[in-house]
Length: 207
Image 1 (cartoon, rainbow, N blue to C red):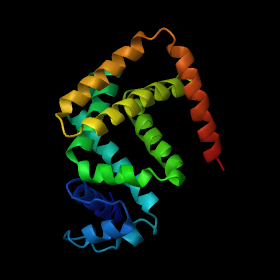
Image 2 (image 1 turned 135 degrees about the horizontal axis):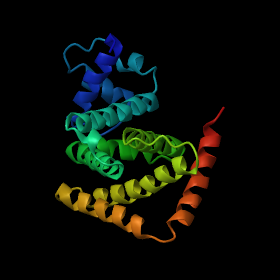
Image 3 (image 1 turned 30 degrees about the vertical axis):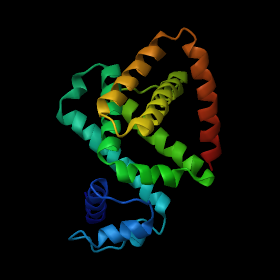
C-alpha cells in the first residue's frame, strides 16, 4: 500500500467512528485535520470530488468486510453462506457507524445521484459474489447480483426503520428474504426483469 492509500485508509477508519452528519469534502477536511499524520488535504486526496471520495470509502468498507471473513476462515464455507455472511457484515457496519451511514443516505437521496447510488450498490454486490467464488459471465452473472440486490435493498429499508433496535432484528429479516427468494417459483421471471434494468444502467455508463 503506497503512502496515499495509507492516508486514505487512516482517514476512512476515522470516518467510521466519527459523528459526521454530512458527506462532503468540507466535513472530511474538518475530520482530517483532527487526525495525526494526515498531511494531504481532502480536496487533493479525492481530486475535488465528494463522489470520488464516496466511491473509495465504499470500496474501503467492502474490503474491511471481506478481509474479516477471510480472517475468520469463511473461505471454506459454501457459496450461499459466504454471501449471507458478507451481507450481514455490511449491515453490521451500517449499524455500528450510523451517523455517517445516514449522512451518506442523505447525500445519495439527491435525484442527480441516483446513478452513483446504483453504482455503489453494484460495486458491493459484485465484490461479494466474486469473493463467494462466482465467475459467471452469462445470464447468471446478472441474475445473481439482481437477486442479492433485492435482498440488499429490502433489508436496508428495514434497517433504516428499525436502526434503533437490536441488529439481530435486521439480520433475521435479511435471512427470511434469502429463504423467501429461494422458495419463489417465479424467481426466474423476477430476475430477468431486474437483469434487463441492470443491463440498461450498465450500457448508460459505458462511454
